[in-house]
Length: 64
Image (cartoon, rainbow, N blue to C red; front, side, top):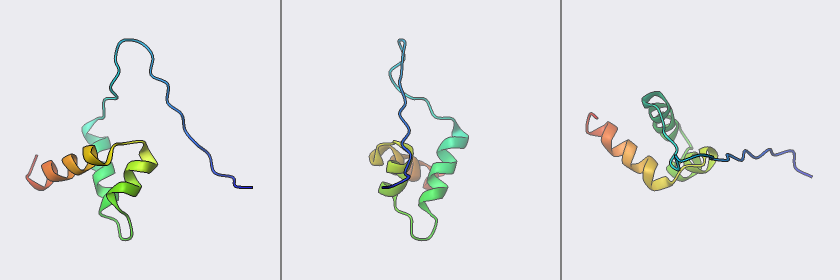
C-alpha cells in the first residue's frame, strides 16, 4: 500500500480562479528547469494546467 498523500483544494465564494503570486510563478518555472523535471510533471505536482505553466515560461524568457 502506498503512503502517497493527495491535496484537495476547495474553492468557495465568488472567485473561481486561483491567483498565483509572482514568487509562486517564478518558483514553479524554476522547478521545470531542474534536471529530470518536465513541465507536465511540475504542473501535475502543483495542480496546474501545463499550458498555464508553458505560458509563464514563455513570458519569463521574454523578460516579463
